[in-house]
Length: 270
Image 1 (cartoon, helix red, strand yellow):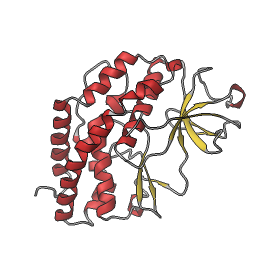
Image 2 (cartoon, helix red, strand yellow):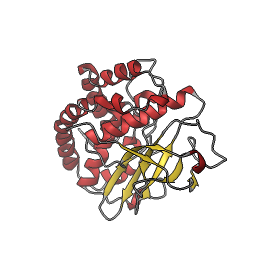
Image 3 (cartoon, rainbow, N blue to C red):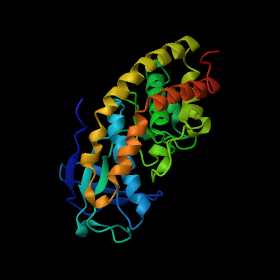
Image 4 (cartoon, rainbow, N blue to C red):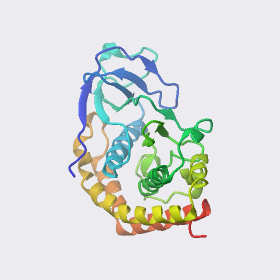
């Protein structure tokens, strides 16, 4: 597998919507005639690393064959910005294509996810991905998932909290049980509908897939070549942090931690 193809786009209309979440992402119609939810530079050094995390997370999720929105580097033209949004002039944004006909997985909607062995495997794989990439922003209270009711696809979004949530100054550390969607309502909802044998079989399959995903992820290390220079992120810091993901000890410890957390939150191994 080659490095995930990154589109380079520009806005063709004014920002049409500002999401009132922490990063205040904006919705923009781009030159490929698709709408993108964009996160952007601001005069804050940590923001650049969050954008780097978004790009790294998206490319690694693609290597893992997770359902995740297409990503693009987006130049939002100066005259297209919403005046209420504080941004750094001249630095491109990272955009994720807006998905249609999906619902946000939340405490009020998770029961609409069809509980079967396929959705179980999708959720397990996303959870394992989070353990491996140290995603601290997908928890029992914040699923960061979308769901397509028609295709039964669980879609992974939002990677700003990977690699232990920015800066890269400390070694990677394992997630705790409560950092994971394994203790979220959606996981319990799906697990109740399948047998312990089905869960066990899914985990066996996932273990084999895990090492294949790691192999494909190594080919995505060229992410550094696609990171905009305007973000002024230290390439050396990013390279060292990505190398940590592929250290044998980290890979083995991640699987062990994942299984231990899984046993605490399901009938697996019982």
